[in-house]
Length: 284
Figure 1 (spheres, rainbow, N blue to C red):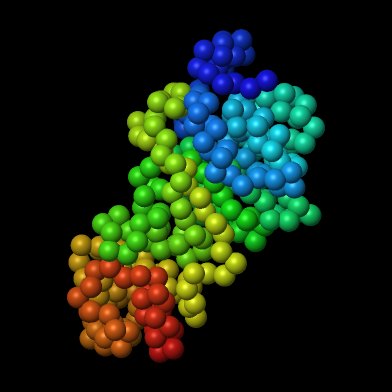
Figure 2 (cartoon, rainbow, N blue to C red; figure 1 turned 60 degrees about the vertical axis):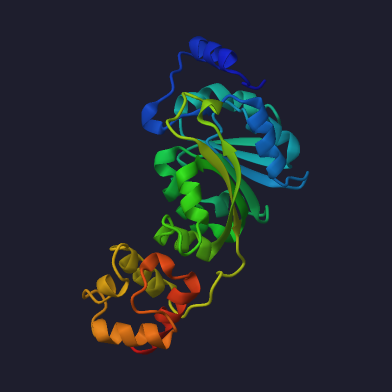
């Protein structure tokens, strides 16, 4: 039993008295070709354990369950859980968790399963919080494959020098290797969202992409530098958030790192920010 087209989906909704909830950002996949293209990108084996975020009406779930050893389907909507739990769990290797993924402790849920693969069609309004939550739980995750708004996917994978490169790019690229895999047109979903989506892969790194003495300090520097991205990075950095480091001191530190003091935040790489951080750390 799998919902595969809009006609069938609407019939189920009529039978069950269900309506998509805008407040939950519900956009259900209705395109078989897109489903198949997504599945081709996820390297599953009969030993894989998969966590699916936003299982919905099982467009992905039933096939995922056929391709892996165990599927943990997380769905926030209680009505959807009521409809789908008996159908999904009849597969024998599926467990449905009716909860918000932001509240779920994956390490306890997947204990003894090794590092898991996460897939999700993420409501746009919680895309960034979900990604951050997955990074926080990276010790039990091998990789994440998520469908998010294309604009955010572009920002996440953008390199230094790009106009859309920012603090979120730095944060995610520090902990993961992000890759944009597939572009998905908005008419592949119902209700249709206002923008196109992308399938984004986040490969969890065994160690951060750059070495730094104090990662929290580095991210404070990054966030501060990007707070006035149209200005020289030195301007917000010397604005008082780092006591004892005035403009001239920041200029000296930039030069010591081989960075032009007139550089803007978006031109600096993670390695640049790490070098700045280590000097600040050593001189606190």
